[in-house]
Image (cartoon, rainbow, N blue to C red; front, side, top):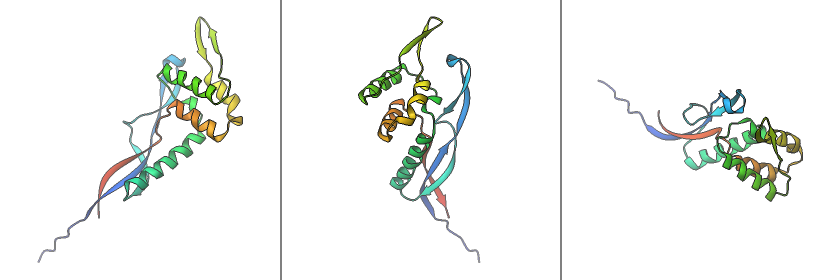
Length: 148
């Protein structure tokens, strides 16, 4: 007599830490910059049977990661983001960095501004500035089926 074992399938929600890879950003002088992309796989860090719990966990991990990184270390392709950032900084009552000219090109030293000011920012100010930069997601939730 043959016994048939029926496996149960269950939907689970996995929180993945997204890989961060380096790529050369030629418009920033050829320096290697971290790049986080949706096409990268991730490392599982937690599994939940409930989607809402997985999202909560992801958000907690994301907030913790954002508190530990230099937000200006990541590539930003949009001048609109920096224009919005200037508005946010001024709305917070902070002095935004001045635009400078070097070799006929205008630029704003946002990274220098961050390094000079990060120690004096309140948690609320830091969170709003990072939100304005639209940092990449370091964590994401993936729905999958598990057999057991």
